[in-house]
Picture 1 (cartoon, helix red, strand yellow):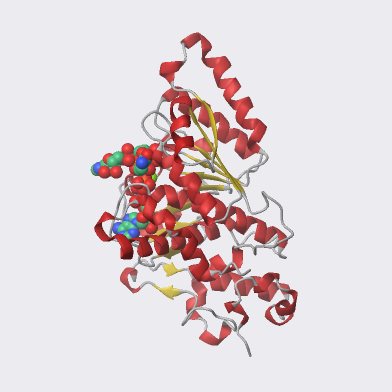
Picture 2 (cartoon, protein in one colour; picture 1 turned 90 degrees about the vertical axis):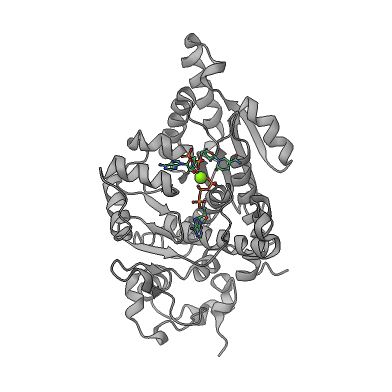
Length: 388
Ligand SMILES: NC(=O)C1=CN([C@@H]2O[C@H](COP(=O)(O)OP(=O)(O)OC[C@H]3O[C@@H](n4cnc5c(N)ncnc54)[C@H](O)[C@@H]3O)[C@@H](O)[C@H]2O)[C@@H](O)CC1
Ligand SMILES: Nc1ncnc2c1ncn2[C@@H]1O[C@H](COP(=O)(O)OP(=O)(O)OP(=O)(O)O)[C@@H](O)[C@H]1O
Ligand SMILES: [Mg+2]
C-alpha cells in the first residue's frame, strides 16, 4: 500500500484522507502528538506509526544528553503537516500576513532578514514597523516589504511630545494589527527607552487582539525587564540566543544557566513565566512550553554569521500561524495538548538549519545570511513540494 505520508498535503486530499485518517479522532490526535512531540513515542514499537515518513521512529532519544534526556522532534513530519497546500482557490493573505516590529538607526539588516524570510517561507504579505531613519534603508533592500516609518527614538521626540507621539504610534499600528497572523517583536529594535515603551504598548495591544507574538533580539531585552508583557500569554514565543537566554535565566530563575540539566531548566523557566513557549537557540534548538520539551538538532552550518536568528524568527512566525490555522481547521479545535507555537518553532528551526546547510555547501567560509535566505525555498520544497 502506498505510504500517504510521502504526499505532502495528504491531510487535505479527500481521496487520501479516508485511509490516512481511518482511526477515531482521539486516536488521530494521539498519533499526531506522538509523531511530532511526545517523549512517550520513543517507547512505542516502530509499527505504531503506520505512515511514518522518517527512517526509524518519529522521536529519538538524544544519547548525548542521557542524564537530562531531550527527545528529537520529527521536524520534517511537522513541516509537512502544517504547511498549507498552494490551492488555486486561495486569495492573497490566506497564506499569512506577518509584521516585524524592529529597525532603528543602528540596525536595518535584522528586520529585513526576518521580514523577507517570512515571505520566502511562504507568507503572502510581510510588513515592517520601524523608525523613520531605518525605513528608507529597509525599503531599498526590497520592494516586497511593506514598510511603516512610524516608530520614534528619544532623540527625535521632545519631553512634551512623548505622550501624544506614543499614542499616535499605537493608533497607527492598531489599525493594522487585526490583519496580522503573527508579529515578530525585536529584530534590530534597539534599546532606546522611549521606543521600548511604545513597543510595550504594541505588545499589549497584540495580546488583547490574540495575535501570536515572536519575541527576539532587543524584544527579549524589553521583556526580560518587564515580564508581565508575556506572562501567561500562550501565544508568545521567545527565541533567545545564548546571551539572551542567560539574562532571562538570571532574571527569572535567579541562577546561572545549567547546561547539565538544560531541558529541566528550560521547562522551569517556561513554567515560571507561565504559558509561553521558549526556543533556546544553540547547537541544538531546545523548545518547551513548560509541559513538553523537544529539540531540533539537524546539522545546519558551522558558520555563525549574524542574522541567522532573524531568519529563524521570521520563519517561526509563518509556521506558528500555519500551525495555528491547521489545528483550528482540522479537527483539533479543543485539543489544548497540541501547542501550535511549539510546532512553529520546530518547523522554523528545521528549515533554517536545512537552508544554512545548503548555503554552507555552496559558499563555505564566505556564507552570509543572504545566502541562507536564498535556500529557504529549496529547503521547504525538498520536504514539501509545491506541486503545480
Ligand atoms: N545585520 C543586522 O542588522 C543584525 C542586527 N542584529 C540585532 O542586533 C541587536 C542586538 O543583538 P545581539 O544578538 O548582537 O545581542 P547583544 O547586544 O546582547 O550581544 C551583542 C554581542 O555581544 C556579545 N555578548 C553579549 N552578551 C554577552 C555576555 N554576557 N558575555 C559575553 N559576550 C556577550 C556577543 O558576542 C553578542 O553577539 C538585536 O536587535 C538584533 O536583532 C542581529 O540580529 C544580527 C544582525
Ligand atoms: N553552535 C551551534 N551549532 C549549530 N547551530 C547553531 C549553533 N548556534 C546557533 N545555531 C543555529 O543558528 C540559529 C541562530 O542562532 P544564534 O544563536 O546565531 O541566534 P542569534 O544570535 O539571535 O542570531 P542573530 O545574529 O540573527 O541575532 C539557531 O536557531 C541555531 O539553529
Ligand atoms: Mg538575535
